[in-house]
Length: 220
Ligand SMILES: C[S@@+](CC[C@H](N)C(=O)[O-])C[C@H]1O[C@@H](n2cnc3c(N)ncnc32)[C@H](O)[C@@H]1O
Image 1 (tube, rainbow, N blue to C red):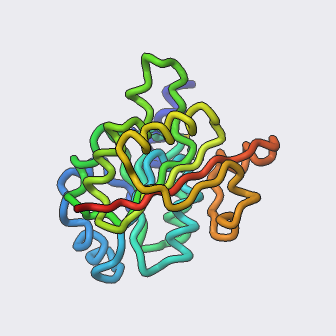
Image 2 (image 1 turned 90 degrees about the vertical axis):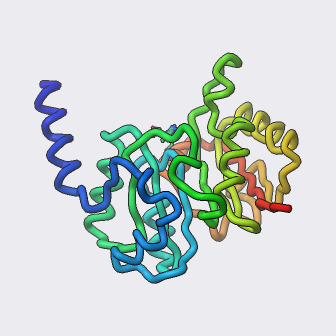
């Protein structure tokens, strides 16, 4: 049974493969050309979502903003395949998904190559000894600041109050500039331009408040 499931997954990954990259390292410093050759415009802003799940958030952004490029990274193939399926049915040329687990974004992107990074409902890793695995740990944040251009942004949303508190401490420890903040995103002024993720919809239906913070990246 498990073998049949895996075979089905492999077939679907191949069928929707036009939107899947299994290694992105070779495109470092070359993403503009990558998207241009797929039919997108040239000199467009590029945004990254780490842990994009089934891709709703990224696909909605890509559809609403054809003048920018969007890259999603997700290492769980059974989830990623749902994003690939959507991308194939909508045939957008400004979106791509990377089938990989991010350890250091600098492996995939050059200095200042991105306009922004989205982190939506990142895994909380609640045990203190796993704090370094949280995608908003200061080591990750430092790397994000390297690949986001001057004036670009990093956005983070979560239902998890502990992870949000931890993230704010990490932001403060690096003296990063917070430009938007809400402990209840959906009742805030930022809600009107919010795109929902799958987890967000689930937590919202459970009555959970969504925490939100946006950082502006500034270089000397
Ligand atoms: C809690 S889910 C949230 C999914 C989606 N962002 C949403 O809001 O609906 C977190 C996702 O991040 C993925 N993820 C966690 N760490 C990652 C990493 N280092 N690189 C790529 N994906 C990662 C997980 O596989 C999982 O699908």
